[in-house]
Figure 1 (cartoon, rainbow, N blue to C red):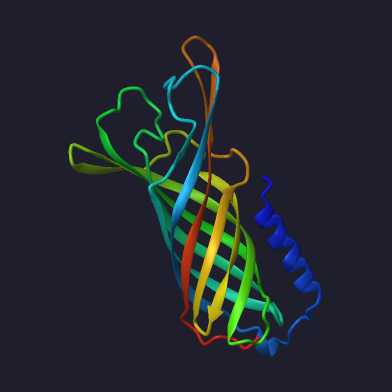
Figure 2: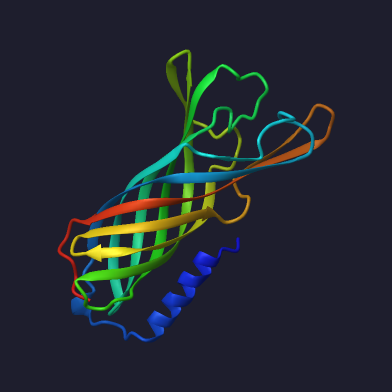
Length: 231
């Protein structure tokens, strides 16, 4: 997947890493924090082969997407850190998004539930200023927990992915500000290709492949639980 934001962040981090020496062991303390995000996801559905609803939308968006999680951060240079993040997210999407069936007009709401584990590289661009400008780039692996549907004013959770791949790799890029324990970031996340997909055979013998590509933007607020490391 080609994205100018991700490419620009990668170049910034490489230049920053080359200009900063590795820090001493005294400054490599692990920092622990929590975060929450709110945003919107955009989807591109592809269908190769016969099947599905003929007039189904190929492009659609979530009404909103939310996430909550925790992270550990450790500096590897004076202004470069590595983060491990884990989080839960859900997306309020148009009904019949996952099944794409022709008999579910009575659905009122659909929501997807996902957990993720990722590794990120973060650069502090403004040095020792009180409010630090931050840029980051990361990779995540998501696991699709299941989806919930609301019908007849009753919500039911389904612990499956309608035969789509549950594990999906993603890339992320972020920019924001860090003030003491508090961080405010804008973040982009996108699938690495059409990995959220499934294949099956029709009774006629033909093969069908469906995929849903997802990417989106969010505003994220973070809070350090441990004392910030001076960098």
